[in-house]
Length: 188
Image (cartoon, rainbow, N blue to C red; front, side, top):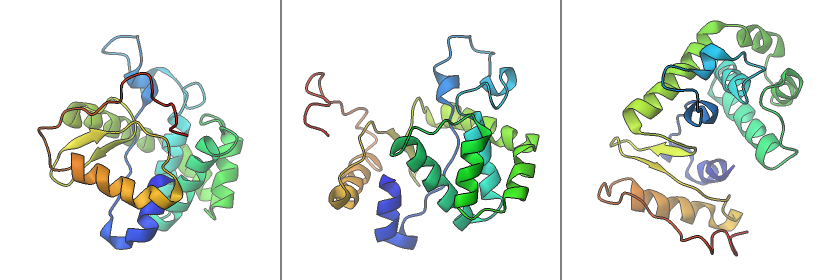
């Protein structure tokens, strides 16, 4: 949603590669060997189905994925808090995004997609130190998490440029944090 607005302005000058990250896994109290993708089914876990659905959408091309991903984010964060572990809402989003739904449903059953989700998560944690979303990984390998509300539309690009300018090249900045309170007083 925020990055979609930025991408509309920057076009091909902004290359976004979306990867999977499991908040359920990172926040698990089960211990180091427990993996949500090994212990829970797609419908029992909070968001594994949505991650696999994203990978299924990627198989239909970048444009198809972008439409599906934006629609899923919108349904979850700007809509009715669409569930991320139920077939019907996700299939409806696939239909509305113009995906080949028969192929999409078939791909949802492919265990290779769950392996991609697991691999993405392990790389995010092991290589980049990710602990939350969104975590940005920059071309130079630096990574940065940002906790934010969606900026106002007219500030989307400027907020992104300031974030990138501050965090992408300055490895000496470890954390920027607003004291509690006032966050989020006045933020929305």
